[in-house]
Image 1 (cartoon, one colour):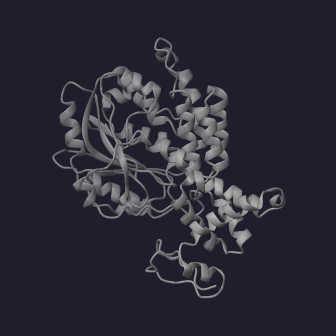
Image 2 (cartoon, rainbow, N blue to C red; image 1 turned 45 degrees about the horizontal axis):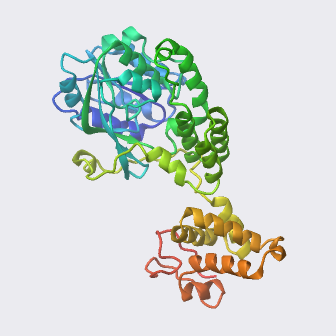
Image 3 (cartoon, rainbow, N blue to C red; image 1 turned 90 degrees about the horizontal axis):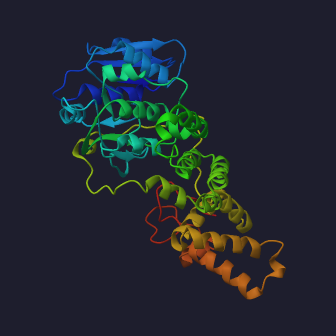
Length: 429
């Protein structure tokens, strides 16, 4: 078991609990500390469990190097990897080993995707073992990032481990080489929880992925050439990258990536996303979630696992909400505080839907701007009243906005302004 980590003792402690709680399997755990400056080195030295060994880099050398150092130190017949922010079921290793038996050299399971609050977003199903190599040439189809697949140690070492020139796509590259050399076994049950949060590596560093894809395309050209497959499935890879940029808060970067996909692949869908993502996250989320299956029942092992404790480090860019720029402009036109404008705009977007909300917002800004005299009075009145009507559901809200009474300051305000989530309170005007 190899776990790379950097300055995340709270998450690492939980990951170690998942690993050391594995049932019916003998294991060793190698934690590679990639230059942590927090309490991680001290805590690792104090661990009493003899199954845990740790190796330290005095300065960060990258996650691929950390995993390779763990591979070099491993003594077991099989290798498994776990990122410190993901979760395992207690039967994960035992079930995968049983599936592999003597016939397969790699094995993997289904994965459940969680957000940073631990809310299940969907089930990411595993690909079929037959045709796995072709599937991997199209896209990184093994769910759960680097926290899912197990492989025979001899095979991993024979193909060369992780390519240290890669960061975002290092696991994808290794899976391709493993699938080209060995046979696979699959477990259809969910044994991995992949936590997709704004501080995760593939979100924070999404902008480097296109260059890594081109490197992979050249590296695996001999495998690609006879198949006619385009590495990353053409425009799909760019849509995935743009989704990561958007969720990291880099909306301009997402637009540039969508436009590049539209130019390179003549993709009208990518062009449409470049426009829509300026005001709505609907298509971004659809791209991320289309491959997932609905969560009908949360696995028992995950329900009993407790809170995730995910926290995005200070300085990380939080995801921008769709339509934030529109919210600010409308708030300014109405003389509202940014918080009041956000609450009212979100209510209107829920009531109207993202598409109609955008149309009404543009119409509202035109009707309230310097071009207003060029618009028919009836059209101006309709669009302004319609948007405000969806914002101000009740007479009490309307009176509060006009300053005739205080706005409610508690959550149980019926359909009033503050009937939404806790923390929406704006007090009295």
